[in-house]
Image (cartoon, rainbow over all chains, first blue to last red; front, side):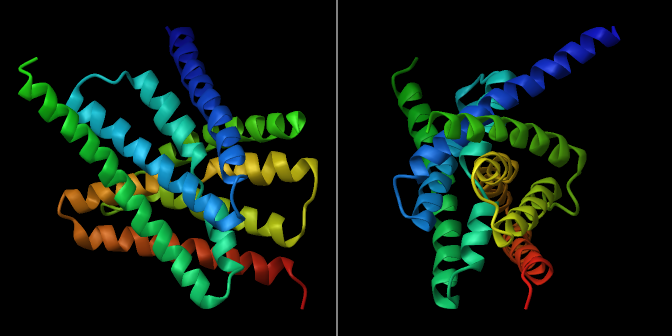
Length: 132
Length: 118
């Protein structure tokens, strides 16, 4: 019995670790295409759109398996986006630029989640419209 | 280049697992998702410390880009904040955003105070 729980737990961590592996590499490659601060902004916004889509998909569109949520949501998208790099980059900027960077990251990631949610709602409506 | 990518990836997998364990151990405090706030501030402090002590090479890719980049998260923070707004908790929405930005910047300032000699 205990052995079973332990195996489940290990598999859970392995799933998140695999997602984190891919997410961190994607962040490194995508952010590397830009200057440091815009690169961080791009991965943060991209990750927020996709997380909004994933989370609201499981809420409105139906079944997204818990393992899928762990791999993509916690592992991949959690690691694709980063708060620590955003903080340190902001800290090293002149005051006005720092304020702008904070404003851009906050508004665009929130708009990103909203966009992901809007796509899901559009898909739900289309599905209902088709009577499927 | 390939080994850099592997270091980022391995660091990233460790960071993601640690984030899951640490943020999962901390419950919501008064409607504020304190787990995400905790990993973001701890990660910001450590990354600032490594940045100000100028860690270069292998360790930078593994720890700074991989592990600490993945230990902290912006997407979960944005989603949780958005969710608070959606649920009509606009005060907690603003408080959560203010706390994450202010506490993390203060953590970076603290690291600067400790690790950068005057």
